[in-house]
Length: 426
Ligand SMILES: [Zn+2]
Image (tube, rainbow, N blue to C red; front, side, top):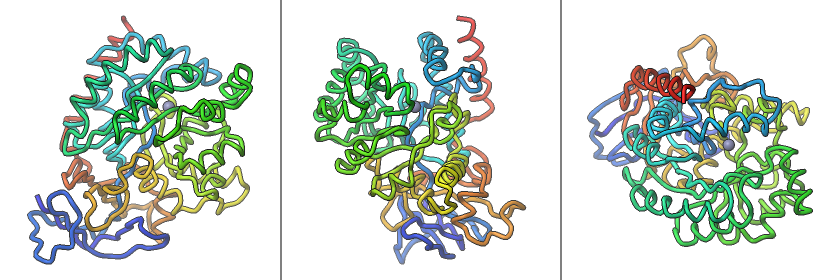
């Protein structure tokens, strides 16, 4: 279906400060300037901001099940010790419905691409194909090399079944969980797997807490990133590091020199009191910084607008500078920088002719958006995820006038609640 989005306030995310009133033509799933374009559907977007849909560059979609659970744990490690035993009891049906719920939540708040790390991923892949979204699915490595070798066989099947499925909407990363659960030898296996499967990236948690950093310092005499880097586990591959809260100057330089992307997860870092990642410093160094929600159990939602708001707030206050990070930089983190980290920036992340139509329309006819004044500022500081009205991915409409078109949300909520109840009784 060819769609004409008419008279929108367009924020193309191609240049700081650049917005304009105009049309976007969607033909065969892509943004076009075809002069002979004929629309099957016309959307009047006079009261809408039109911008690229958001990229959630670090999440654990199926952790939806553990939302608002054990929130009184004193830190990341004790919280994880509550979560891990529960995860051991998860079955396919849990992952299926939790994945669907995560996708519903992300679409409803303007996100169409995410970078996932979890397990029993075939359920997430099937749900993704139905949802119409796109994702980079993590082939998770967790534990010693022997365990990871066993997992490699399952990963191989998953990769051959789903890679590039859904018109290229499914991509894969290899995702060694973190240095405190998964030793360097397992990271080396991950690297080998990536080299054998071009187009895959490495996605891992890095320097999230001081407990993690101190543990690696004690065991290996170096900080986590420096240690793994010097072990050669990142040689010749594309790397996405979630968190990077406690990187040293030397480690920041390693990220810069090797084009590693860092994913900022402000809600999770604030909630678990892990610390504040110095994103203004990263950006100043020219490092690609993206934005993620982390899992909904450490957030406790998957709302990227809330994440943008918080990222801006804590960057400003931690630097005692209200312009430490500009609204445009924050918006880049949530769009094109996420796309760059996932190596899909040739397709998504900006509104440009030739790119896939991964687009959102945001209703600005709202009390909290009046007067709008600066749209970039509004997008970071005032707009709510629930202001997203219509969502496209590859030109297909996933939500229109707030109604999800690719799933029955009532059924998804009901089934997820049933799964949670059942999980607790196992
Ligand atoms: Zn995480």
